[in-house]
Image 1 (cartoon, rainbow, N blue to C red):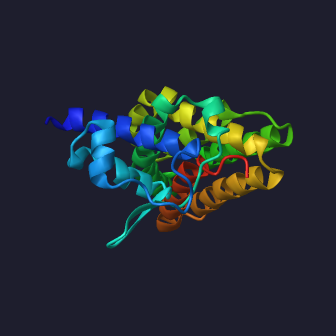
Image 2 (tube, helix red, strand yellow):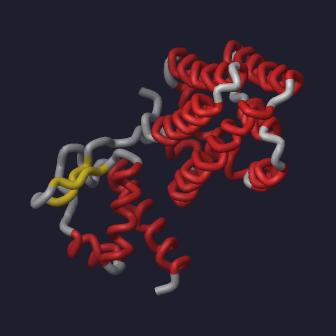
Length: 231
């Protein structure tokens, strides 16, 4: 089986199992059907199924217990499906995964290379998000511009090209997580903005390692917040 075909099949199975967890067909704290049963149900090979299960584990929805099988440990809020079709969720999660590597390295370089003017622009973008949060605005565009400003400060056009080429995919993920945050408590928005501030401060201090870690943590947290719903 070609790699692209396996990836596509695994994404489809991932989304089918995710949908079954969200609707309660596979309850929290209960064991999933065996691999053989799942392969038969979704008409895929074991390697494809294991790839899908590995993604669910990365998203902290499923855990494997040696000798006992796989168990559901978390049920995402059904509100997730109000803002993103189930058919797009696997791709959104993979985009977060890719961004964590690219943008954390860009933040590292930004801390080393940023000019005073670039730092001022990053701070301005951060402040704009804060004002949008106070108005309870969605602020997807503002969030994207903040991340783009950091990438531009890395002074490597390849990073900028990648971020701009992924514009729609990145905004799709931001749109989903920010909508869920707006439905949750104000503390959720503050938490996200605090993560932004940690990145800004590290870049201001020219602490490349801290900036890289702060960006990786922020994007990883955003990926997991996608399944926290409005709680």
